[in-house]
Image (cartoon, rainbow, N blue to C red; front, side):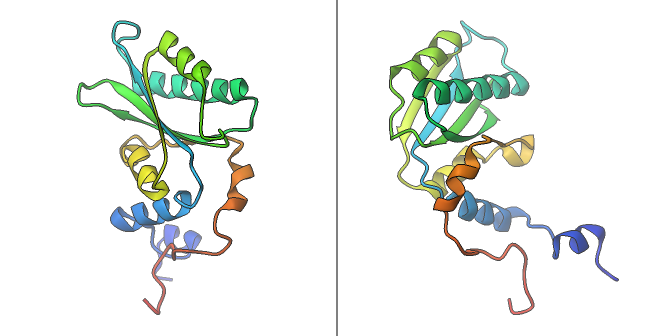
Length: 167
């Protein structure tokens, strides 16, 4: 009876700090992400940029990318504030055959500004980088197609999400 409401619902105390980051990286880091994309706004095209606007534009671009590739691309994105104070987004893509082609890049450039696309070599590390601001902003957006890619993750539990009596 000494447990608080959160502990009784979840089965243990909530994860925080480094434990939460590690569990998050372990869970999403097992997906074979293909591309890491930074979506930045050129102030000559769009200014100022709020977190809401950056999120809406990232969502729109991810959806358009899937349409242009004619593929059920899985994606996640998170927005963050840059050193200049302007917001931008980082996205991870899966199901792209390791390339975007010029179409998705061109529509971002035309509409918003600067796009940087890189292949993913270390999935766990890029997941942490992509979502580093999410603890503060409270938003990570996953595509509805992500369910398609979950079977490629490890089929067993990799990390305990809360301490057990044995630990």
